[in-house]
Length: 274
Image (cartoon, rainbow, N blue to C red; front, side, top):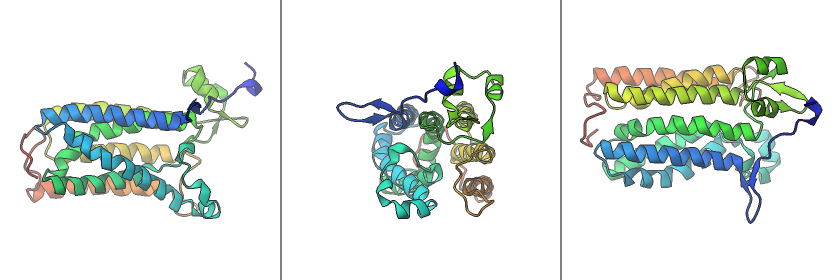
């Protein structure tokens, strides 16, 4: 096939009677699969499976709003001049760190109201979160976003990628690093790792903090390859700064919680105390 004839995949999944974009459909699929996994695990850990249904009814919309606001704030030069674009989340522009802030804050308040350990909820939900992130990156793929710098077609073929991925990485006459794929694979591996760590019976909270460490390490390196990073300064990428801070914070919390006795309970304990 001639490169000039390569056409990007249609970002619209269904156009009638309503328009549904692949971006939203893929993210929604990841969220639903994650919810199903969390519901099954919550029953095994002595919680009513409906706890996570109730939680996501609040957490998902708040996370989406926070993810969008986070992105818009750091792109305010554009959105300030084009306020009508702010609501167009189907075109992309959701910052995962903003979404995590919203989801975690919602989880803390929810756990407090329900009288359930936040750390227990976070541990149960951690594999679901990273699985949703792994699947959600394919929404970026459909929008031809979250890619890296320029590469050659030969480089992509050398990675033994399927043809449809190679073609979708051909954007405006240039091939790009499929960084969405790198991060997706990293997160799928992280999902498997967290499932294995469940059996280790870590201290309460440490499964979630292991997720934070794993995801942040991968995001740090992938972010360095991307061309669409939100920037703090001309040379400082916000996501990389946040990733380093999260790794240090997670490690610090593990150490402090163990030293102070706040993490004496373990993942497989069935009570709901903190």
